[in-house]
Length: 163
Image (cartoon, rainbow, N blue to C red; front, side, top):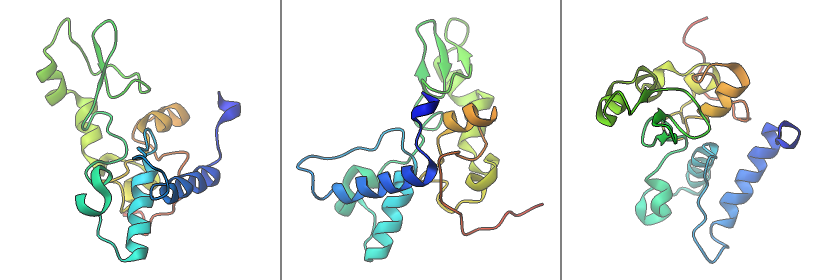
């Protein structure tokens, strides 16, 4: 499906359109596997002078972008625990280890939960805690699940602390 992938700027425009549709659609729209949306939501709210909380943005204010390994995981048909269904990294085997042990002690999950581990733009982005970039796309594009999100057009305000 690589030939059907959107460019980062097109993806950004689409998510801004999605944000604009939230007040026009007769039902709640939920962005899934679109972590940048939660950055865009906050940028748009800030531009309008709005607070982002449950009263103003409902459940969108209570969640974040990529939940893989931080608030969600995937268990394959053969018991392998992964950060998500798209990020096929073995975090543990339920046939050998309890879920509690895997969830709390997997080195991959620990790395995903420590945002200071993130590299590139994601590592210096002021929205990393609400977006996080798609870890599966980062891994697919670079082989590093902590790399920057390849479909993000945003340039963080913070400069790289080193290098």
